[in-house]
Structures are given as C-alpha cells and as structure tokens.
Image (cartoon, rainbow, N blue to C red; front, side, top):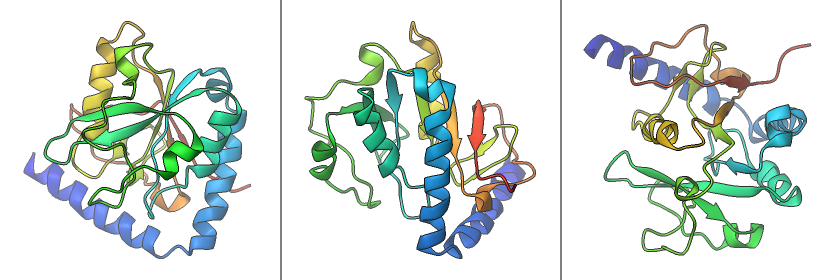
Length: 200
C-alpha cells in the first residue's frame, strides 16, 4: 500500500511538471480540440443531465463545454467539494451568469457556497447521464490518477446506489497527461473513456 502511494506521488510530480511546461495557448488549443470531440460523442449528444468540472489552470478548459451544455438545453451540474473530507456533491448550475457569481475556494476553484442550499443535488432527483472527469493523469484503459483526495471515486460509489445506476464517465486529458499505465488499488474506479488529441 505504501509502495502504491509512493508510486502515485512520483507520477503526480512528473505529470505536474509536464503540464506546467505547456503554454496557455497550447492548453487552449488542445481544450478546443477535445471540446469538439466531445460535442460529436453519442453519449454527450444523448445526455440530458451532465456533471462538468470547473477547470483549474492545469486542467483541460471546460468553459466552451459549459456554454454548449446550456445552448443544447441540458441540465448542468458542477462539483462542490468539502475540503475537510472527501465528500463532494454535484449541484445544479442555472446559467452562465450564475457561474460568474460563484465564490472562489481556497484552492482557487469556483463552487457554490457551503451555505447555499437552494440548488438541486444531482442524485437527490434524476441522477446523472454523464460525468466529465478531471484528473492529473490517465492511461487509455481508463485508469485515473486523481489528486489523492478520492472525491470522484467516492461520488461514483454513491452514483452506483442511485436507481439510475452509474453514469457514463469521460475524462478530458491533455496528451501530456497520458501515461502507459497508472497504478491503482481496489478503491480506484475505472473511467469508461479518455478523450485526448490523437496524432494524425
């Protein structure tokens, strides 16, 4: 177990180094390519209820995706992380304007305030059809290297208990976040699909 933790820590360092070397222009370019890939994806086209992460500086940008979600009339849910635990809820985002008013957390992520109880939690109602997954690293078999808090693994376990069952999961990755293989343990939930820019 300790060896696995050490291996994951070393990989996190390596991937952070790789992504930090990317220019903002390159991150935007790859993000745009992935957004277009996603917009053609049958699971995205057919989904009605989708959870989207609000990107940090070292993640694929999701603003274009969120704009499209609203344009297509889908219900959009975003994470609210509890920093003192590994608990996360997916709360409804009402509009692009709504997103602009969200407060920033200590991690510099926008999310609904802790005392905001006015939003629907995805699993309290109709569940989710699709979750877009952030992460630090991925391999093409769907293994994911998160930031070590376990927010998404824990949330996916809750999804499995919902009548609708586990949503389809798609990770959005810069090419630089792909690895030949990621070491995982029994608590790591596999992702259904990893989207990345394939070299022609």
